[in-house]
Image 1 (cartoon, rainbow, N blue to C red):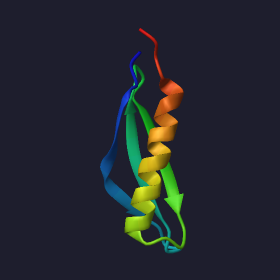
Image 2 (cartoon, helix red, strand yellow; image 1 turned 90 degrees about the horizontal axis):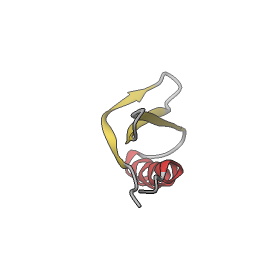
Image 3 (cartoon, helix red, strand yellow; image 1 turned 120 degrees about the vertical axis):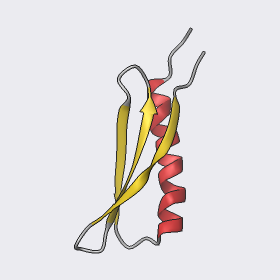
Image 4 (tube, helix red, strand yellow; image 1 turned 45 degrees about the vertical axis):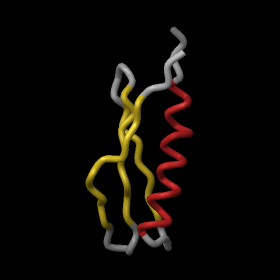
Length: 65
């Protein structure tokens, strides 16, 4: 069984309302982009939460060998 690789992309998009979006990629055959927008979070807490959610999202692409 193989779990797809995933990682956070380097950039963060900042928005005029004070929120920001973090992007990641799930390395499946389609190379899925995953993003989350955060309001009222500091970057460290948002990044930690994003990593957990990205891992959870990648598990949807679990492929049996």
